[in-house]
Image (tube, rainbow over all chains, first blue to last red; front, top):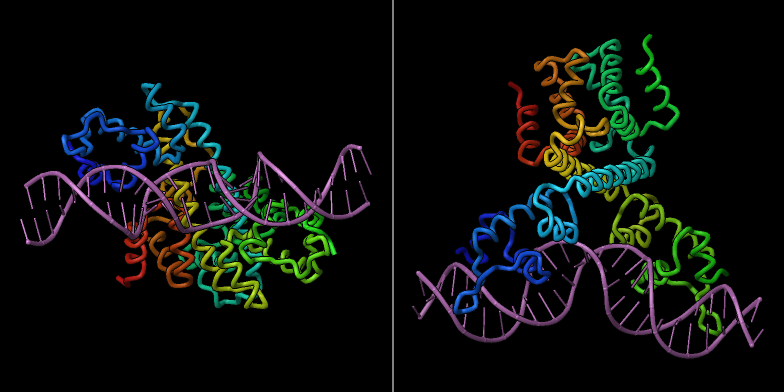
Length: 175
Length: 175
DNA sequence: TTAACCCTTACGATGCGTAACAGTTA
DNA sequence: GTAACTGTTACGCATCGTAAGGGTTA
């Protein structure tokens, strides 16, 4: 029967996380030693493991509480909801990215090592051995495999919406 | 001289946001009416506008406080730092995405069209005509031209720091 | 004895939203 | 008089990290 520190180490979490889970009733050790130390049973450890996996998926503890106490298998509904949220959050970050790039526009000549531009990107692909024909194949494949990601990527290079549309059309249309 | 509610409406923010900005000293109205109402001057409104833009970029209020009080133009350093953070955050969300999809394995058709992963990226480059040697040249050139952007990009694919380090080392070392 | 555990409790961080109670303005 | 403003103050949220002050174990 591990104590709180042992279980934390094994699970790759911190002691204070387990203290918190105990406080909010998410994971209460099934026993206490005579000196009032928390003793976690195997069942407790397994419960923690499920909690941990859901946390890695980004589910809030409130939702996890329901999942681990009521449902036996993975809850499809909650995970699909989370999937939608993740996409929203990524979208929000992409919009922030666009704002930052706009604010940085111009001031970063070739100085900024961090700001990626279309010109720089083309240069890199060329150096890797892709000529214009190859780059077109690249766009076409990108568009085919993950159109939304393709759009996100083009926006992250600082292209405006019109140019993004143009490129996607060019990559989508055969010929 | 608008009152707090008017300015909030104009700026598209809430009254409580402006109250908060006042409390933390980020934006204090330059005047008060006889009945102690906040009166915001044009200068106040402009300050708020700068604050708002930086907020849209995702900068924390602490950083914004420095930017709007000391710097005149946009601060390149803070924005580039934020750019790196954004990519990290996107990467974290991609890892969550992968976890969710794994938990949903089987129950969901193939991974959504929006999900960008390392594997998919490699596939696209391959389809464009880059073999492993070409992909290595691509990494090398990326690292040479914009090392920070290279790192940001890899993180945004959801790779963990160790793998990013490995790839960058592999691309940085000549032979 | 000493290091490395453990206990409980509380505060901090982030950026507001909400509520409560009261005064002001149109 | 009444609605729609305004003021201040305080609590809530989510998920822990950190610290304080003091027992327990090997």
